[in-house]
Image 1: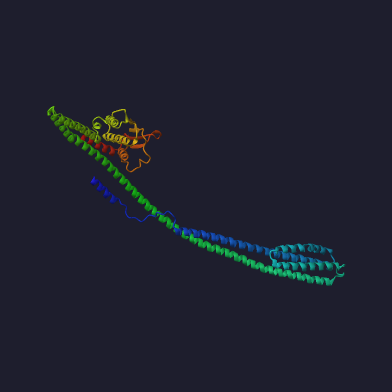
Image 2: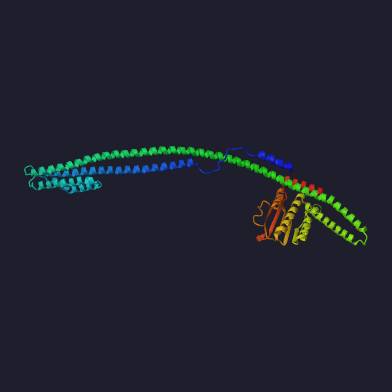
Length: 493
């Protein structure tokens, strides 16, 4: 055992993983990466906001620009209407042809429409309402004077008479109207030029801001891409190191599990060997000594006189104590290594043990075994016997049962052992307790034989059911190891 422990310690030192770079345990994205992401989002929002603001301003400027063109066209149309009225009036006065009156009257009806349209276009500019009022006043005066000249010229034409003074005053008034229109046209041209420059400036500002923010955003995104590449590479390295460490740990766990399995098998084998050795020593040495003592005491009893009643009684008590000691010796030997198991088979040994259990505890113990199982592998026999022995001990201590049923049957796939009681049932969590050595030992015995071990509550949650199953074809190593133990124990007894 000391050599095995030393070997395990040496293996522990050899299997220690080499010092490695600390693994990344935090799965969160680094703060500087998060900060760059937020900066990128902020830049995109700023870029979008500036584009919206600049586009809105450019559209507003363009609307003013378009309205100025409309005003300019309206002024030109108004000027054309007034000029048409004046030209038609003069043509009528010079020629006396009434055809000139048709465009004249059309102009008389249309100038106010054009003026109202002009007023509507300039309605948003309060400073220009005075110009519209002045233009309307002089235009109305000029139109009135044109009409007065026609009324005061009953015979127009080359040979007729014309109101020259009225014509002169009408011309002066028309000149004043034209001067107002020309001034408004000049102002509107200047406004159009300024608005055109403003539109161009806004377009360039919008493009410049968009280009600048786009360049900055692209630069930040490139930086973010590089940071994410570094982060992903670091994560990949960390995951690779973690995977390598996990593989090493898995290998170490497998190695430890194999070593512990071998150690457990070794301990069980050594335990059975020691039990067999102790049982042999008790049977050979202690048993022969007790037999010799019994023979000597009986020899002495036969030679004591009948009248030495007190001495004979004392010797009888010694012989009774000796008989009880021999019986206790036999129970100890059977507990260490049941001789009936090797001499009479598993079925007889289980029935005998159950009878002894019922006699000792008063519990009903029923055994259901259809055959003797004399040809069973000794390692299987001792494993199944120990499971029954340990289970009955637990039932006597904890189950509070009144009846136990044991069934051992051969199935097509192997041999199944089932032990059921009608007690309080196994407590929840009892299977996971680290000090449940008996359950651990039973499960380990089955594992070494390639079998299965289950323990749980019975039907409807009543009582406890223990099942052990050994397949017909256990692995060669386990079978050979069990056979070696069985052969050793059979020879030892």
